[in-house]
Length: 428
Image 1 (tube, rainbow, N blue to C red):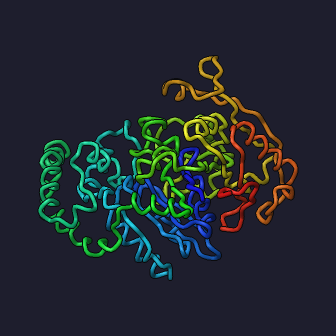
Image 2 (cartoon, one colour; image 1 turned 30 degrees about the vertical axis):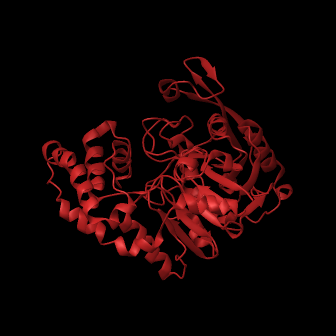
Image 3 (tube, rainbow, N blue to C red; image 1 turned 120 degrees about the horizontal axis):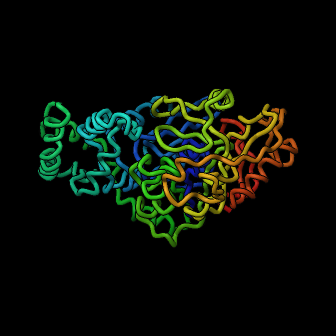
């Protein structure tokens, strides 16, 4: 039985939640291993639409155990708001597990996130202001607060006091904000202790025992490859490891346990926030993709930047993650275009790059080199077999497969859970 990692192969918002959810009926555990509530998944089940931010998408699959791994940063207020919202809609959340080693987002980090972005002005990163970055910084600086600290009030207060000794200096002397009181933070966090206690587990042990027992486990990334802190478009990235390797450090399983790595990729490209984006469109075609594809952030509501499919990025993601499969989403959005451009390389100062340029400056100045592929006009939202797609649509998929260097095993042709064409079994 496999351990499957599902990652975003572009800048996020590719439809990872739907891809994971579709595996849910055959999966025993779904693990979120990085990020926090700075990203979101939209999953459509029948007539119901669910927007998930912190919870793994497996929460919607009966019989599946959703796990928040140690690599996630957890805002307890957001966690329980999501749990309450789902319970109110009849979703059973009783199986949810939270790693004892996951770090908590204290209120002062949300404040620091927002004021720091404003302070940066034109140099701002484009964060969501939810305290994610400062919490990961605390983790690396060894002044973070973990879920397990909630159950030892003395240690919790000591850790909060240690963190605030420096942060209050910044808040007061640099940002002209009021100092944060230790008791204020401690009382806020302790208010969640008893409710979260039944969920807390040694998730590494749970997952390894599940794999030993032959269970199916899916590891679900937040954000995406091009936002990875090491391999993305630094510094316009997230603060965690959003690539396949992050599944190991963020959940406590060894790399030899992973059987497949599935990249989810749109039939075009989007990104949110600042940073380079070679195929970005600023014309009516970009607006067409935005409106037709509903390209607005699940978590932030921000309009996404849109552009054509970038095969250079796809090849890079394949290499960085060791992809075994691609899930191509939102193919239906391209219906009605006479031709569909695909970026096959970059021009940087007269030099052609068929692979990712070696430095950020070159990538920032990259001009896309396009190949025009014929479009199609037929409605494909009801198609469930690849051979029933219009011939030019089939040709588009096969061209992307060849350019991207990884087989396309599933194709999304609509937002519904069932609106998918399967070419290869992702768990087989």
